[in-house]
Length: 100
Image 1 (tube, helix red, strand yellow):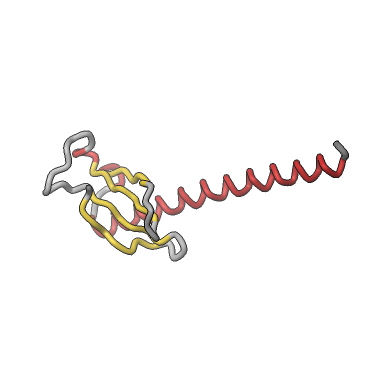
Image 2: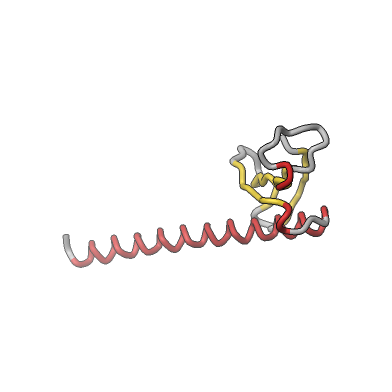
């Protein structure tokens, strides 16, 4: 391998690392925005719920909001846990639905 090839391979590796770190930071930022939404709209303390990203084949990111006193219990019709659809470009929650 020539020096030029090694330099090119190293630059690709560094770029990949930077993109991966950027995505992780974006994910943390998105969870922070969703958490702020829950605190302001449901008036729950941050230690009363957990936010989990769920894979979805939809236009928006799907986050599950788990009300911790209900964690591990079967979902019922009057469950406080719910899901939100989050627009990753606009950084805002666009829809809230019952937990399924």
